[in-house]
Length: 546
Image (tube, rainbow, N blue to C red; front, side, top):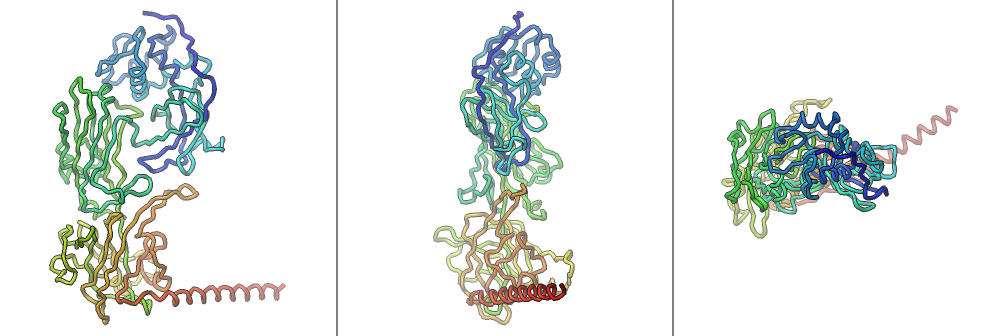
């Protein structure tokens, strides 16, 4: 059935101020270009099934039909989807079905036919409209918060990335609307919920600071709306994954899960390429949300070998309609934290060594002690023989939770590296990695430092981790490893691997005496006075010379 050329009209010609906030799994996407392509006019023609003869005979439509992915079936000028939806000349659709088809066209690289249909009206731009930094029209990229804005025609609009790949559909209806766009979570019908964490573990940009002994349980919620556009979802692990799958289950009998045993084996789950963990298939006619429970654990051996300690624990869900603009959901970003200690004499402001400790945490009224097998055991009294059940924490060691310990690496790249001196100072240092935010941790001394009496005071501490964006657009990580809560200028210079803002040490007092801050202040004051005197002498010399 043929139709006369259509001259569709946009519902509104007014341009509406529109803002986007772009992130990548919670982290702002900065200094990146995006554009918007109005698809309302094209969608109305698809909805009514009214296409001009010139469009049907044009190169854009012919190319789209010839390169259609296998999940589309082409019959003449009609396109039929696996779920039963179809579009083409003379096929009338509902608003909901037309939007689903629009998404499928964009996912399957069909932007060219949308742009061709847009030529049927004078009221919609024929090409994408660039976003720019708020108030800076010439800066056509996102700002330091991932924000950009522009003015758009009303209606359904496709967001495109710098390579003109489809990202997401938004519905522009009012002035000054703001749309959140997460590049790692583009499907409104797929969502991961992390069950095995507490609110206290959440940090900036939606990350969670976890302990390396935690098991991770995810619930993937598949919205019923998705069941009408696809018949399966794929779960995948990224390349070099540190995550190992234990089980993937659904209580719904109409859901079929086909696992890939490679993702369940620590030796094969961490391959150099992404690996499919399972496919989730649905029965035809299913009309309710689906919850898929994915239980996993961390590959401790891989994590402990990472230097610096970085986690790669993501899991992705994607629909089968793959193309540029794949619809996906990604699990929240997980990080871990830790802390460095320097055993010191607070009165002398000098390093000490020889003390031994146990690592513990308080949960309510109970105290738990970290044990050599990587687990936490509840104890009733700290005065009992803890060394028989606890991991003994000693100087010169780096402890990675649930992954054992090793000697603190020598600072061999330091310009004045001295092997014997480095080893001697390291005996005063303790490094603990793999702790979570929100716990009340402590160290308890079970053996006094050399030439000192015992200090039976509980040394409480917590850990933290956060990200922030610097003024120049750099993503900066800050944690209790990179920043100490107490400045020790007289000692920091002696610690071989000390690096301001990257690797700092917290004082661990080997006696009850506090740190003598007055001595530190005196040294700082003397340095300032000396600096002023040197400056004055220099100025006097210059004046005299003139």
